[in-house]
Image 1: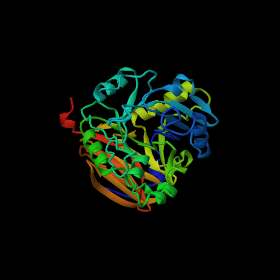
Image 2: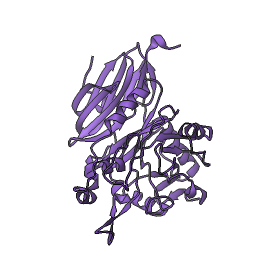
Image 3: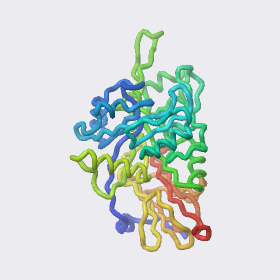
Image 4: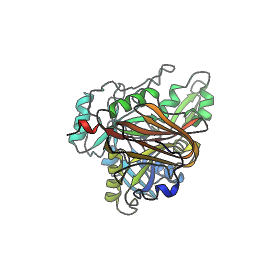
Length: 364
């Protein structure tokens, strides 16, 4: 049974959440970026963001220098992108204050957990061979017990479509390259969630690169921070408003939501995504992703988007229901991995974390 006429009133009984919008995955002058922590925070504030997490390669220098905290209206947190910069298997680590060994990716992931942190595979299916100076860094250590996966990486998609003939057009209009997550990444994400919860993230992978042109006579800044912050944003769904005065409280709120999958990713180039909701109700109890429910008793899935769009309900990687409008409703008692993809202007817009519905006969 399904009904695509859900209304705002129908969602009013769901648990109230407070949205807080920020960005993940960026680099400063301390690794291979071109901006300071303060400059990047200022760009984020200009875009109306509330928080960001710096992830320089292989170190926590910004943390050790005490460059976390409040910058205007923006909270700055410090993580790191672990792994050899010249080899595959990069891992975005959050919530750690010391570095693990980074030689073996499987042990590296385990050590992040031992240090009290969590993380996500960075650009897992990166593939490109047009430019020698821009090699790919895919993930190969799939046996590692990682917590999450970066389902959409802004810089990776831009570079993967870059050629010698289109590069200047892409330099001038970098955000037009964003169409949606890599299908191979979405496929393996669904498969992983059939076995255990794996959180999905979107990342800007911001460097604000200076690319040499005219045989090195000039340098063109590609994908400036402020430009990148217009696109892939992360919407946290918090039980209380993000604290505006105490860094320790705000830090815990942000990291807890990220760790637990209480967020969704959105490409703001095609529309402001604030107000999106994907809710499951079972037995009168309301849940947000990435909750695990049991089959048997009917689950009511409800989706609300802030403006007209194509809403896709996905189950186990397959399209289950498609609606054009601002809402979707579906009822099911079947096990599976349920998530939502939303498109506007023929472009990927919103990607939710999933609900995991496990077979009640196999529980316990």
